[in-house]
Length: 339
Image (cartoon, rainbow, N blue to C red; front, side):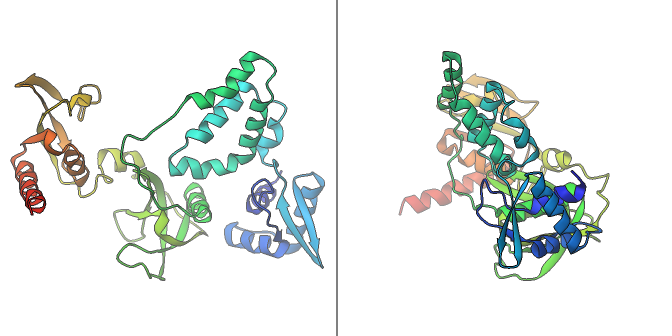
């Protein structure tokens, strides 16, 4: 299969998940906007006819127009998997499908829909007790978030596909972004996609802007439009997404500086820190029926949210500025409930 064939297959609706067809001119138009040196309309039509001969696409003639879609199961892996998939592989796929609770895996997994269908069929064809145990396994496992469950805004799959494509192929991305303070914005801007990060149910695009030294974070659900451009850019060798996220702590929201955090927990509230430390240099001991914990952390709004979640079961002993801030909040909170 040639590169043009792969690009055409990528643009076609999948009969396994969609009823729609697209016309040859529509496919050609998309190719011109996304593929450098796209072939002519006649060449695209010849490629489609060859793909139909190979049983990979379906054609529906409406009047004089030819409309196309990808055959169900025509994806590269799924086309070969039906007779070869083992029970172990089928179980792994079904487990992945069921427990991909985060948005990025869920959005990426859409391309595996034919494989999931094959896995489901494979697990239903059980002949022995061992095989039946495989089919029952996914009903014996559950995953639950440790935080309060919120209903986060959904991300448009077509926009996610454009962002992912631009990120993978290192192309410039034209977006219309509507932040909370400007929900009617229609002005397009060009950004350089550096990475995708999921934080607490929200997905962010980390992107640079030509002429600016530091990248910006854009929430994907606030993208009104997104289009991968033909123009490529040189991905900066100095940028490392892991450093941006984990070391510079750019997703901790309003980061300040490192500080020695000293906490006093009551009623077993902080016992989980004995197994999941808050810092690499954490120290702890028990005295006066309380757990004392200290460690070097980055001061941020996320840290404050975490501390507030313990309510009266934690006392901040240091740093003094953070203790004073939370004490003032406690006084204000008490005044609200004492009314």
